[in-house]
Image 1: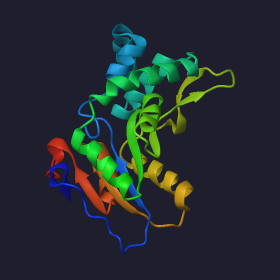
Image 2 (image 1 turned 90 degrees about the horizontal axis):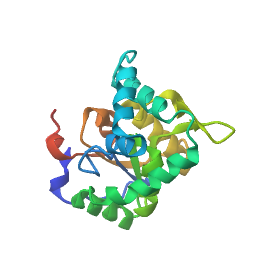
Image 3 (image 1 turned 180 degrees about the vertical axis):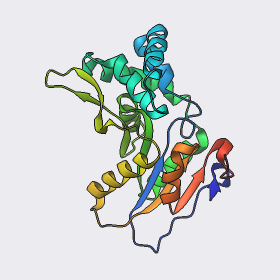
Image 4 (image 1 turned 90 degrees about the vertical axis):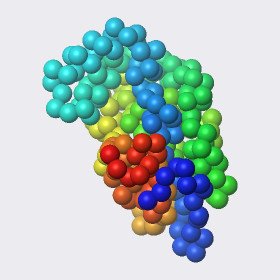
Length: 216
């Protein structure tokens, strides 16, 4: 188990496995939460507060709360509008990126590794950010779009991209990329309990920030 301050890791050049680097976003690649500021920007603070309070009445846990609140905020809005808001939000994210983690991204790309963001934030802004950073993918929360191009309020898969769902999303992506039965060498970066399963899967786990020693 390493920390982000330990310097660039050493690739296993003898394994013969494709390399994958998976980065959590909020608190890891970015220094702080980015979802709530985006929701406030897209919907206004009063609506975000009201949607969160409404969702809290029926939420079983934090994941249910988040999925319900996000669904309430965007239900019925054009998907194209959300995509436009996401693209416009990207420039504000650049200044939030940790320089040492951006350097890790460059290191992985130099070594030919696939680099992905695996996050519980919205794909509406993480996908265009991944394009800007020349990453391979952003595996994040996506909203269901109906036949008319409107958001239904449901989340694709009905799950938050957190905990075991991060592992499931990454395995699905690597299966499409390399083949289901092809093993890969994984570097993973995270900062919170929602990243524990992803870090446990990794050959080279790295805790970032206050979790850099591997403790809560």
